[in-house]
Image (cartoon, rainbow, N blue to C red; front, side, top):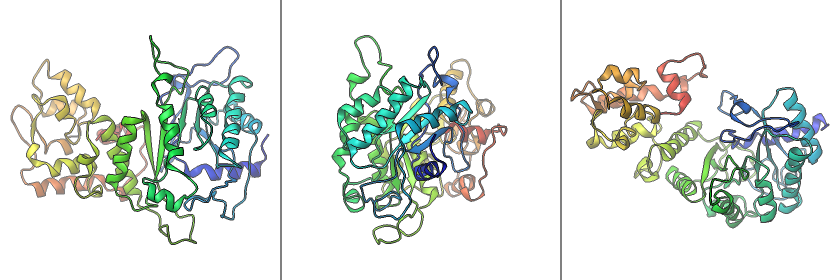
Length: 418
């Protein structure tokens, strides 16, 4: 079993990687196997800051050959170093699973000795878990940029999800803050993992290659790129590389010996707004240009959907009984599920405001942007509308949501609907 001191080092070093969402896999258990990633196999648990803790999140090694200025594992940083063996990671995962501590594994690593050497260690670990320990639970593996394509491909057939973190939003920032890393080494495996040959056969979708797809992560605030730049890059990755998720990690100061990095932590509100905007990109039909507008940065006072609606008053109000689905999705306070409920319900009757409440529309937002049967009950003055909306999204007075508070606002936040 892995030593306690080594475990503490590797778990502590892994906390800055947030791309560990465990949804999307349907790997079932097998006879005499251990673990299950099918349906209820992954039990999500979140800390107050929103991080998923249902997976064992650990580094294979924090002994890195690179000197990325923002990273705690950089070679010039004076920290304790440790490297685990594949056997130690396997035994730890299985023992934690048996004790019901975890429901899966998120395995990452610093670049130890060389990209290929590190990727080989990671591959051997997941191979042992699958074939020697018969572990059928969820595995998210963070790939190593610059490693051999064959190693990456073989690992892709053993894990549920893989990620190659782009980390910094521009080539200029990458050269400045992580000069040993190259854009091509990050982009090339992303392209490879998105190739149709891994997912499509003549008859059906292939199920044994990364069933939960690939993700990536960007650090927000370490470099000066605007929100528009970040979202445009995310939009590109969603369309080009079949990305399941792009994660945004607020920059936390770890290196005070350089003037290239901010000395204070970036705003958590900015990260929050980026996740909201990302949701609009993926599910609501918005483009990055529409969300950010000419300013290039997201509004801190309003969520991105409200901000867009306030900047386009000529498009509102919309008649809820006549507007197409694409228009209803853009109304603040109406989420994706609500929009489809509205489309279905109005086939049988004309909806009024009470009907919308029963359909779980967040009326305190939507009422200013819709009419029902030609009636408008919202504020007529744009300044008053802004005043009504500005109080509901302030993070300073927020508290952790409880699953028992099934009021309208709690349900909206839990489902991510805006």
